[in-house]
Image (cartoon, rainbow, N blue to C red; front, side):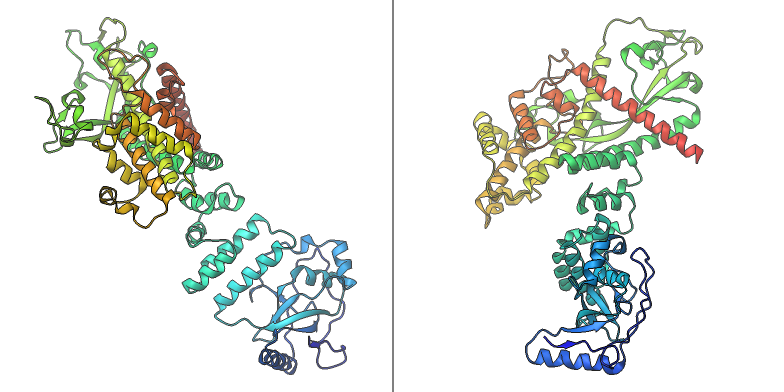
Length: 584
């Protein structure tokens, strides 16, 4: 290899400087010194000769370590703590020439820029060496962005082979690379060298403007895709904590689906509450339980002095509380007329070709609308001039209230569960787990009709993220592996049972167990839904309250107690946030 390393008295070596190297702990950078024009031209001539001979272009060159520059022309290097990583032993090894020869290139402005050897250069400065050997080559071709991309990749790879970069340093390198204005193919290639996919690069670009979500990506609490998705919650510490915990459990996607739904409902509820709060009503975070109804008496349990039912016209806000919630109602789609669930022929959910019974509606002719529900409770009925109706055990209204409360969490459970199922079905395994295939075969043997039910194919289509007509005509199976075809078959089974468990938003069937009160809700065959939920748990799904109730792991009373505790905690958190906002 050609060596250009002349004594300090000759004209072929860069001008040497007195021993002015800063101490290792001193981060101040000397001003880089360009090579004399004739020395730089001689180097470029030798580069060209070596290239013409088919040899590597780099040559050895003795250079004052105080005259070089690191990273880009702005002085940025992937490793921003190089000085702090230098030990006395490392400085001694450089001084004894045990470790030297950093790689560098000659820039257009005749400055030598180090591409691999920042720590060795700092150590040479600390050792007071007037010159060390650099393996110098020509400046990389391409645009400034292309050269910077090459720098980043080289620096990351070089540093990772020696003293590992910190999470922050590696992330900053990936971030800068993702933001460079490079042709798509060049950027994809450079990112791939750092282990970053195109999708992850888009996430990094989005995260560049984030705070807590970016920090979660840097520390590894969330991967890049998860962190980008979590940006919408980065101002909510509680939500971020839930997402990070879910990521550790492998349950991120279902959790963010649930949080989005909770936020949507919470926002709509807060908007509905505002006018009642402005009028002076006491706002209840949840529906009062039976033992609390001596203090908060429902409007339906009160009468005026004349014995008439209490109406909103009889209400004075100062003596009343309200619980505002988001509920559902069933309407005839064509007219918007509200009807009761009992007016729908339930058999038509499972058999869409069936004619509804006389006086009842077909399932396809009705729909579910989301509505705001307001329940009034008087907390001073005597002063309001009202009297209570005599109590007589649990009423059908109280039991209906239980249905409403658990339906609400059942909907949330369903959203989380289906998000988990969709993510699992998107995988392309080498082989489908045997227990999953056996579950599908048992389902088909026990209830073959379930695959033809009303919402089976449409639900499967959503879970598999593919058009329903491709499932119907079989083209979904064209040109795919056997394992992928088996996964689609599993998806059809999961869609069928999901369609039976939750055919409509307001009426999840699967939790109605444990000897339900007569004439309140109807039971379903749990021999199908329970094995399905157990299977999902074995695959990593974390069951919600209604799902645990379905499995028989908790009772209805225990479920209601958990729901109440969660609502109380949420109300406390809301009060704390409001108090913090007032202090600000």
